[in-house]
Image (cartoon, rainbow, N blue to C red; front, side):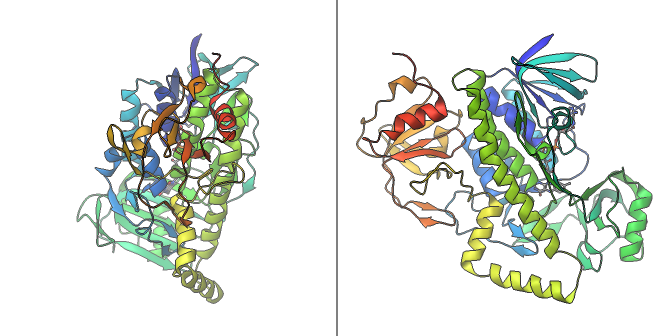
Length: 500
Ligand SMILES: Cc1cc2nc3c(=O)[nH]c(=O)nc-3n(C[C@H](O)[C@H](O)[C@H](O)COP(=O)(O)OP(=O)(O)OC[C@H]3O[C@@H](n4cnc5c(N)ncnc54)[C@H](O)[C@@H]3O)c2cc1C
C-alpha cells in the first residue's frame, strides 16, 4: 500500500495551503483531489482579506497574488464598506482576485515544494486505528497515512466518514450564480428588490477610485436571488431563465452557460475539528453565507494554524495533544464568522420598513470610528486573538511585520517566517538568551526596533523586550530575560528540550 505521513483530501485553497505548510516543514504529504486539473468552474471567492495577505507574506509569496489582483478596500459588513487604510499593517487593504487565480497561484507554490497530488480520484472513506489511517479511494486503492486531513469542502466525505457532527442552521435563502452569453445586454451592477440582491457583471474588471469598472466585452456574470430557498440540486439554464424573468421581467436571452451554480446561507460548523488521526479544515469544518467574503480566508488560515502543529506531531517533536490546540484556537474563529454572516444575511433581507430602519441604524453605528475599527478588524482577520492566557497585549495575537535592525542589517519580521520556523526575537540586551535545547527547532535573533508598537483595533501597546513567535505568526510568549515562563512556552509549543 502507498504510504505518506499526511494525506489531505481535497486540493482547494485550504488543502493547497496546508500541503505547502507541511512540505515546508519537511513532511511527506500528498493531496487526493477529485478534479483532474486545478481548473475551477465558477467564480466563488472574490479575493483576500488583509490577514490572509499577511500570512502569505509570512511565507514570501504575497507578491504573486498582489501582482495579479486589484488592491481595494474590500472589508464590508452587510452593505457597509469598512475602510482599513489607517490600520497598522503593510497590507491595509484587501485584494480582488477570483478564486480560480488564487488556486492556480497556490498550486504553483505547492508544485515548487514537490507535493504529490493524486488527481481525478475521490476519497471515499477511511479506517483509522491507533497507528494510522487507511484512506480509501474511488479507484479501489487505499493510501496509508499517519494523519488524514479533510479539506474536501462543505459536503466533506472525511467529516461524514469520521462521524463528526455538523450542527447548525438550514438555508433561508438561495441564489443562482452563472457565467453566460446574453442576446440583450443587461445593465451591469447591483439591484435590490423585495426578493433580495441581484447583480450583473463581467469576470474582467478594474477598480478605479474604489469603484468597479467592468470590461466592455466577454461573458456576463449573473447572480440572482431565488423566490424560495431551493434544494441543493444542480441548477439548470431553465432555472436561471425563470429566476431572471421573476426579477427583471426578461431573461435577456441567456444562453451558452460556462457554468451555473447555486449557493445558500446554510450555516453549519463541525462539532470537533479532530477525531483521533482525522482532522478537518476549511469548508469541511464550516459553511456559511458568502456575505463578507470570509470562507476561503478562514480556510487558508485554518491551514496555517494546523500545518506546523501537525508537522511537529508527525516528526514526534510534540505530543499529539498539540493538535487539540488547533480546535481550541480555530473553532471560535469560525464560530464568529458564522455569527457575523448570519447577522449580515438578516440585515440584507428584502426591503421592509423596520429592517430598513435597522440597516440605517447599523450603517450609522459603523460610520463611527470605534465600531468601524472593531468590525473591520473582525472581517479582515487582523483582530484574531487566540486565548493563550493573561498577559501582554501581543500574547495570542499576530506579530506585526516590523522593520528590525540587526547586526547583519535591516530585516522584516515576516522574512524570518518564510521557512515556517518559530522565532525568539530578542529586542533587549543582545546575547542574553540561551535556548540551546531548542536550537534545532527555534531561531534566535537579536534585533532593535525603534518605532512605535501598534496593533489593529487595539492601538498603541507597550514595547516588549522579547517575543516568541510561532510559525503561523502568532505570539506564544512575551517577556524578559529572567522570565521562567520562556522554557515552559518553548516546551508547550515546540516540544520538550533536546537532551544535552
Ligand atoms: C458564491 C460564493 C462566493 C464566495 N465568495 C467568497 C469570498 O469573497 N471570500 C472568501 O473568502 N470566500 C468566499 N467564498 C467561499 C469559498 O469559495 C470557500 O470557502 C472556499 O472555496 C473553501 O475552500 P476549501 O479548500 O476549504 O474547500 P473547496 O474550495 O470546496 O475545495 C474542496 C476541494 O476538495 C475536492 N473534493 C471534494 N470532495 C472530495 C473527495 N471526496 N475526494 C477528493 N477531493 C474532493 C474538491 O474538488 C475541491 O477541490 C464564496 C463561496 C461562494 C459559493
